[in-house]
Length: 115
Image 1 (cartoon, helix red, strand yellow):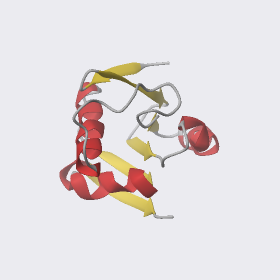
Image 2 (cartoon, helix red, strand yellow):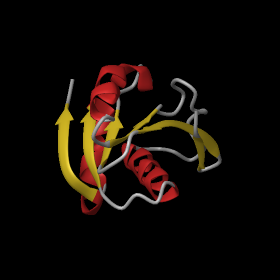
Image 3 (spheres, one colour):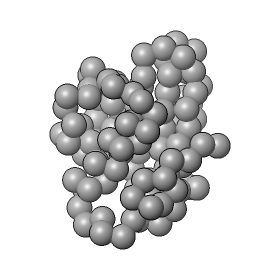
């Protein structure tokens, strides 16, 4: 299971499949397991990236100095930089959907849901 060190903390993510990138950004109280059916279906045709938010799943604690959802969106962008991914189709749920507004230049398309 891969990790990237972002702002001094380990961020756990899944990276499965080949092709155009679909970035699955979940909600609080869930880990990457919430996306298991979508990962299985999408990874046949796409490269699917899913992340455990800070303090969830296998990711470390919220990095010191993180004070807003904009900070979290910047940290997700840092993960894309780490993976050398230029453009994604973003699928965001609740908190994960906040990335949709934070880095529009990196998105091919977006699908968000708020609870």
